[in-house]
Length: 315
Image 1: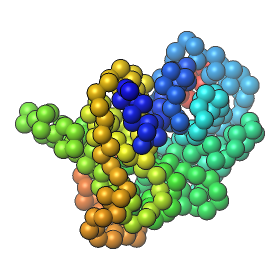
Image 2: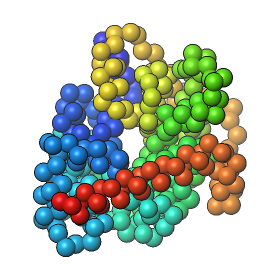
Image 3: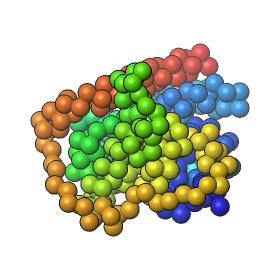
Image 4: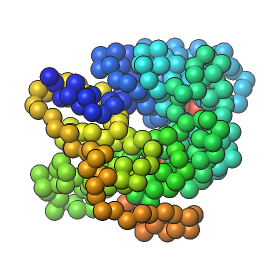
């Protein structure tokens, strides 16, 4: 059995791509997209017609609406190839506006429903700012499920659990990137691999907290830099993996052991943690890595949304 098949025994495998032609090969349960992945996809010749067609059909409408229609178009194509859910992102420029995030999320869901897609097959991706988490809390109460992304800290995860969001995406690779950059020439790759990887440790702490306290929010490790980070999180609820790393797992026959387990987490001695807004903001501020990576991630997704708009204007 290859490692991808072994991983699927105890973790839901999710494809992290806007390139839906690659999906059938790996048979993932779910798929996630973001503005950067969609931007990358529409610049490929096989996907350019999707952009052209969407823009021509809705020319004259608000650019934000056309973008949402394009994202939903990709989402529908992906859903035709997978049995589970697709994650579709709210414009990152709304990351600090609760009401605008809710409005945009509701429109995305309406667009999916107009295509005959059931609400339970879509997760609305929102940046895990305080405002984003509050928007997700209200959306979940309305039956719209959410995926809180750009999550780098334990504080963000705790607040998401309190908000009863459906799923969180802690970013393993970007946490690893930050610590590696901080360490500079003193970084020891071998010593910081596997269970010692700071990104892996972050997800493990979140997973253990959720399972210990019976928090139903799903944990989906994201943004992997190497296969070792994935195998060290085997047993996590879900892992969203880029096609090149899926291919590496599929090509490897080495044994794969479960690393995260709900029964083990329940047996741990862990203190309860809760945050109000002030406590959340202070805890996030105290975490330099999470503060920097959250801001950087929002800027990057916003920049790609602007590039996508420029492509739409030129189409």
